[in-house]
Image (cartoon, rainbow, N blue to C red; front, side, top):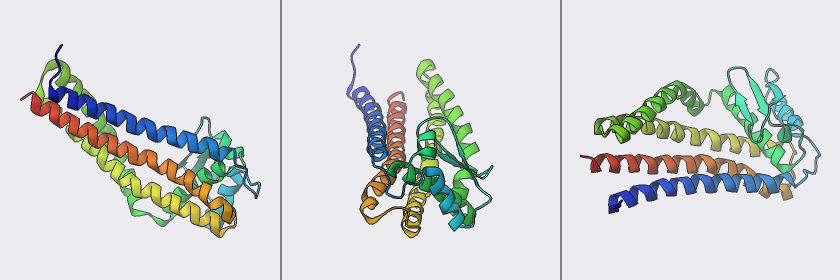
Length: 229
């Protein structure tokens, strides 16, 4: 089978997207692994840090609970719960403090009615539906050679890109709030600022990588569609 220049280009875009996302996740895991080895001087666990910051922001109605998995930490705005993975919930490392503070940052956003957080929540059902249609569309387009179905995939990926664009300020703002709270509450010391910021930045980079990957995917589908005309 001979590959044309267009085929090579579209395959290259796919591979590049995979490399970018994979690289970001490797960087996150590497930074997380290094940060886990650095014991915080205050000897507070991630759970204690989360509760301290919640208390400082008059968010006593929000619970902090343990959830299974690694880096499965998240804030549940519907149930008003900060869920922390075992290593973060019990850990006394810089990684644990940074991740716990970041998730509480989302709780603070929720309390403040942060605009981008509201928009993201509203987009979730739309993006889920569009993603389903997009998967069906590209499957039919590729295997049944029906070019028109590519439009569904373009719409789906565009919806995902919109969601990711809205997610970026949400994540960066949560990290900004986390660092500010950790400093203000005296939870991290000045010589711990750099590794804490590195941990927060590494997590944010996975979202940037996901956005770039989907932009490349969108370009790839557009090129494939034009090639079938």
